[in-house]
Amino acid sequence: MPPAMNRRAFLSMAGASLTAMRAAGSTARAAPAPLTLRRLKLVNAHTGETFEGTYRDDKGPIPRVMDELGVFLRDHHSGATTEIDPGVVDFLAKLMDSVGETRATVLSAYRTRETNEMLARTTFGVAENSQHIYGRALDVYLPSRLAEAMQTARAMKIGGVGWYPHSGFMHIDTGPVRNWTLDERGLGDLLFDGAHVTFHGQVTITPQGELLVKGGHHPLGVSQRLALHRMIARAELLASRHW
Image 1: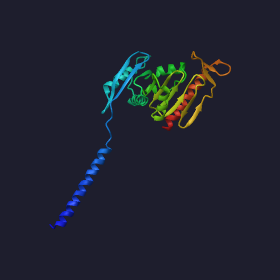
Image 2: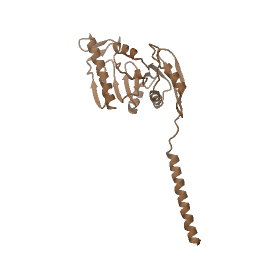
Image 3: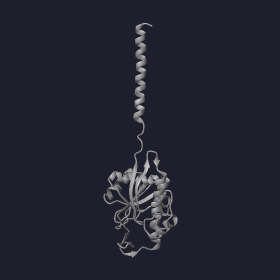
Image 4: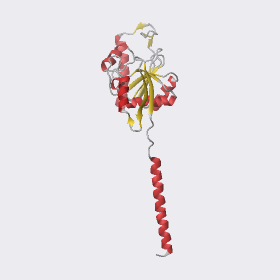
């Protein structure tokens, strides 16, 4: 074969090899990085139990550890357990990492439907179809930077974020993306699906936890309590329909 032909053949083969190497390098760079290990350090406010360890590795949630978390995050009223959504555990771990917290106190996690109904009758702000029933919600306290954590959680848009500033805790869940704030001065507001529902400060809560009608300071009646609970439930329903 003439030298010119050999040179052209060589250049053609070299070009093809270079293109293949570039493509392979591009594929390698685009490959997703393996998941990092996820650790948590938690305290159960009601039982005094602690959990500390790795619950997720590069293969995903560790079944044995998730079972342990199911017991740790059980309904402390009845002792019943359920399978905890790994997503809400990831939500908490990601949130703690974002604000530099290494420890969290869990105030409420899984609730049976019976426990939730009991709390809905006696405690304002408990939704009738709460995500706690499905193992997809956590009420937590952080030793510091709690308000910053709330804002960070809302910016993540992973699920629901409830803020209880005067009670000193926040709620996170992996249900529909929605936000609400309840405090002692006017019970704040609910945000869902871009709409805004507010209580207009018509109800206040005493330091003893009694609900009062603003102005006359009359204790809130059963029908008024139910009306407020229904407002929360309606926001949950509308959000779930949208999502």
